[in-house]
Length: 335
Image 1 (spheres, one colour):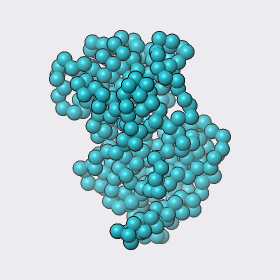
Image 2 (image 1 turned 90 degrees about the horizontal axis):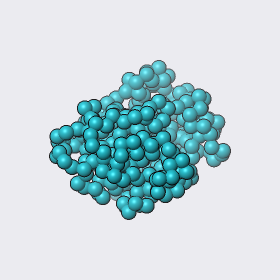
Image 3 (image 1 turned 45 degrees about the horizontal axis):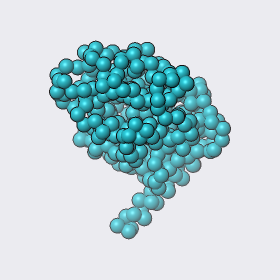
């Protein structure tokens, strides 16, 4: 097996030498990867003989493997969700390159520099050689990338999101998971409000687990009131996936764990602020509750919580969780 670069990570066992390679650029975060799963699976179905190489952060090897559509992960990332300056590619040009990262010249040129036989991407005036469909800023992320592929004759289903149940046991089965972190401060609901939700859940007799990534230990400690379990420091993907899959519900902002919960069919309460749920929210379902006060779009990378996000109160979250409990009770009665 010859890797496209020594840093590449095989995800699906050995890949036969000589297979054509299909390179996908999506060097973003966990939620971005999971929103791109329908497109990745569409590419897998359309090109079963290709080795599919995903250029994404190395820390996403776990979810990339779990989606079942990627053979190899090529570590690639840049600060602030930017396009990487280069890709560590040490192989003949890919047969096909697919831009699932953005719509502008930087990502187009990054892939074009590898001289692929075909480049699939959205059209942009800055790269007139790319004959793709028009970018629509009002489109949901899952639907956007499936529409891109459909332009090139590759059908995809935006609802194809499910991940297989984890084999790892959950560290807190049946708990309501509170995740106060997010990629930027504008999408972080205040920790004291999460703490109020934790107290309300404990008073209702629920188990509560509070999660956080590396460097968020202090944030988790502010939310994990007495009686709640703190899971700080960043769980492995296997442990986080197991926690979410076995959770009673997941409460978070618009961030990766919300997408992971949807992929495991776990009930969610997701708090939106700078970005509307029409662009990044869960599929319509009574098991997924979206809290959002419509208004002018905010800056998703602002250094303070978005004003629309701050209009959501702890009682709004507890009310949404009570509604999920009532839904489960009605199903149990019918069932």
